[in-house]
Every structure is written in structure tokens, then in C-alpha cells.
Length: 252
Image (cartoon, rainbow, N blue to C red; front, side, top):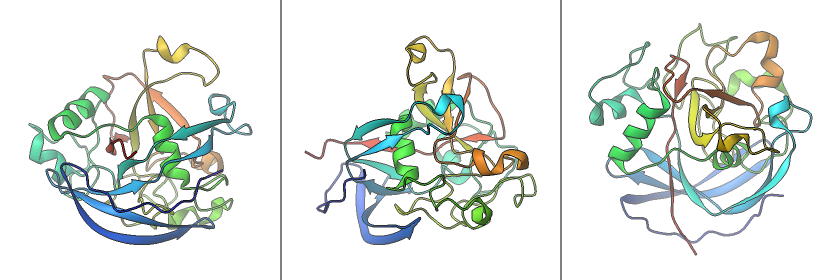
């Protein structure tokens, strides 16, 4: 179960406090503190510490077994990294679909790591990503169990015209995060592996989460779920793959 508790306003090096906001989605409502990362200008949400059930026993084989995870609080970007932000710090814009407010794509995991190191941020670990996506929900999707209303929350094969779209246009989840599902897959820090094995320690691929703008219609009602996982080699580049950044701090 998600732990609901009052979070005091905190300060973090490199971030400016912006506001307190309330978001509702999927039967969950949260009041969160929002921050601006001074170097990049990206807005972040302080995700509260808590426990949740990661995975899905009724999903794809690599989503099993569902298991309990407990996390400290951390900051998560409200949107995917845009091309405008990427170009401030990286030598070129690799994206297939060009536009300042479009998510940067055609980036490898190594490219994503280089970017995060330059700006003093991180890729989220996979558990942080799913916890942020679910935002306290235990339903199939972070907006509930009704896949027929996915258009309100995600860019996918049905509505994307086979291309990316400016970030932040779809409704946010209950933590205020946009495009957590759809638009581009998001690299995570972890090596990919089965939850109940040690494969992740010898894997040659990295985890991706969140699906992309061309998620296949046939799998629409399963692939857009909060537990969906994917993987690619860390040097692989695709116009389906981008990133969302995070930052872990001790708040104890």
C-alpha cells in the first residue's frame, strides 16, 4: 500500500522551490511540492517516500512476480527531457522528429548518462520509475482500469500519427507527471533482468519504461500498463527512446 503522509517543504542544492500543487488521477489525490532545477530549467516533483507493489502477476512474464518495494523520497522530472534542454548541454540534437518542445529521442543509454552527468542529475532506477508512474494506484493503468480512455493520458499508435508530440499536453498522473506512458520510452539506470533471478547482474541490456508513440494497437490494453517493461543494449539508438531525469537526496 502507498504510504500517505505530510511532507514538509524541503530545500535541495541546485533546485529552487516553486509551489505546492494538488493532482488527482485514477482515484488518487496527492499534494506535492514542485521545484525547478536551476541548471536545466526542468520542473520536478518531490515524490514522497513509501512502499508499493511493483510488477504484475497477470501481466507479461518479465513483470512477474509482483513484489513489495520501499523507497526513500526523491525528485522526478514532470516531463521527458526536451530537445531544447538537451541542446543546451550536448554537442548535437540526434532526434528524428525535430522541435524544441518535443522529447529528445534517438539517444542511447550512454548518451542519456552523459547528459545526466553534465547537468548533475540521474536516470531513475526502475523501481522509482514505476512508483512515480503508479502514484499510489494499484490499477492496470495509472488512470484506472479503463484502457479505452488512454487518449486522454498517452500518445500511442491510435492518436500519435506515428510521431512524437510536445511534452506536457496529456493529463498528468496523481503526482503531476506528464507522458509517463507514451511519447517515448524512458531509459532507466538498471540492467534488465527477471525480478526473481540474478540475471540483471550479468545482463547486457538496460531497462526502458513507459512505451512510445507507436505502441502497437493489438497490445494497447496491456502494453500501456504501469508495469510494462522493455530493454535495449545501452549503445542502441531509436526514435522511440528518450529519457526522464531524477535526483535522489537523503531527506531523513
